[in-house]
Figure 1 (cartoon, rainbow, N blue to C red):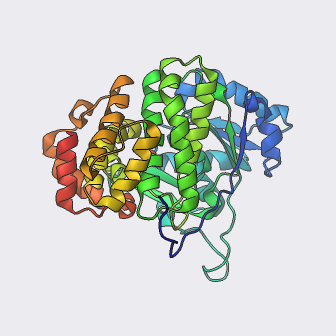
Figure 2: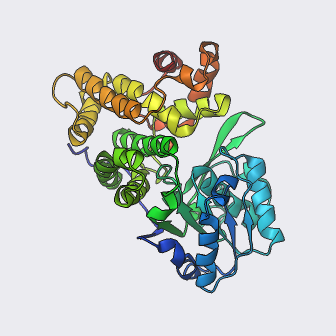
Figure 3: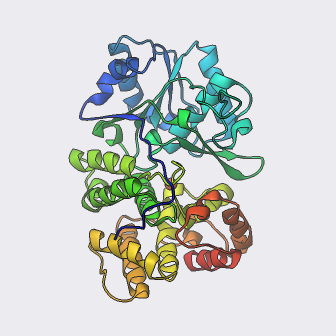
Length: 402
Ligand SMILES: [Fe+2]
């Protein structure tokens, strides 16, 4: 069902995607076209052991570029200090660009390091949306940052094609969001080889993150028709490939298709920011306070928010009805029934992939709920949720998910 003609939205997809088997070998050839000559490879220690870093380095050198160095100090949940250390490493090694090889944490580290590397200062100086230096007294074109290429090693965040990043600020115990046009990576390389050694539970969790992006994006009160096209096709590809990629990691088609689906699932909303919702607000708070991995938290919270949103009236429920039909869940019946059937479909998928089903299983105590509610209320994602939330709504949702 189409929405009314919108009052406003913008849509941009400036990241060039190169998808195919063996594309890591062509990393240098492709990145040179984006102006890079001496990239710093940003990755994590776990990936170092898989041989992928060496492959990326060979790919860079094969294209005639020089690897400035390898920064592999990115933790699972990157922080402002890591970003600043990464930018400093780029300066020290004489790099002129960044190549991120990793999951969301690695990509967001490299993405935000380009800001500090190019413009100086500390990362928190740039917190928020559209905060990068601009010409014409702040009204003109934003100044470009150093080129960034991404090779995602999880099919999840979609950060390789988005202009936003989420970084943990350990002092305030919150996740800081930064988004602006120059942060769209110049290049994303989608090669199934990059997820070949991904453990099944991480493939499952990151896949559920991608599914949450598509569902929240499609149902958002700030969705756009362009974004909806991406979301629906992403969901079709996830329906056919997520479970297969987790069950049978040798299936290169399923893994490659999940990389494509995840990059389509980051749905731009009205302001070209990513349109997300209450699931992400709940998960950001649970991640910042209890270290619940982002995809795991989303997988747990998603069914509860689906049910709650569907109770918000037929206009909202019909959007979930469309998703239910596409995914093969029961899409008939009342608004409540469609919420129940889609929530059950999601929970069953999550359970079949071995992910925890409750926040308490992921380390969240009941006593932590008031604090989580405060965190979720302060998180911007719920502003674009299909239905407006009050603190007591988040409380009810956390209790249901506990
Ligand atoms: Fe996410």
